[in-house]
Image 1 (cartoon, one colour):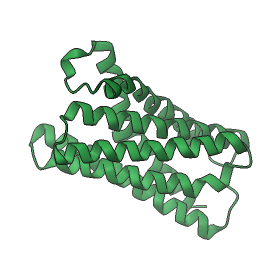
Image 2: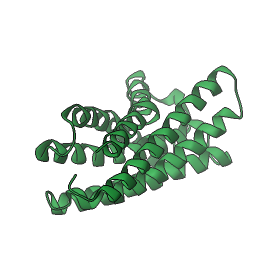
Image 3: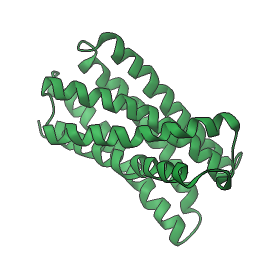
Length: 200
């Protein structure tokens, strides 16, 4: 990334905050399954917070690679921002109990899948420009692909399905993998990105 140290530090701290928020959500969902409430609600809150921080991170990073892919980077910016909003909607639905956990989870997976598409473009851009360590870039590509698996949930959202029983095992497997992506893998990438930028 070709920018000032002040800007790099700011992006780095937002990336770290995004990662920590996401990993806390992961810890809370584990505690929910082992202990119970209020950890389920805390998980939903931190998933929503992570989506907000992700949107901030996307906008902060945008100037760094828009020149390489002018049109595609703008499309990715819109998709990622829309995805963050979709995740936030799913989080609010879960917190307020407006829907069941299944439908709200579909919103979260689909929104994070859109963020995953942005991450794929960012990582590809970094790979072409050698602006980030290769290991981090490859991890970003893998993370983006896993997140993007959540796109399979879009038909369920459009149909308003709120029961896991209707879905095939293959669908559930893909959905759970994508969920692991936004609960653990993507936050880990964000944390590593932040660490990398802060040490520059």
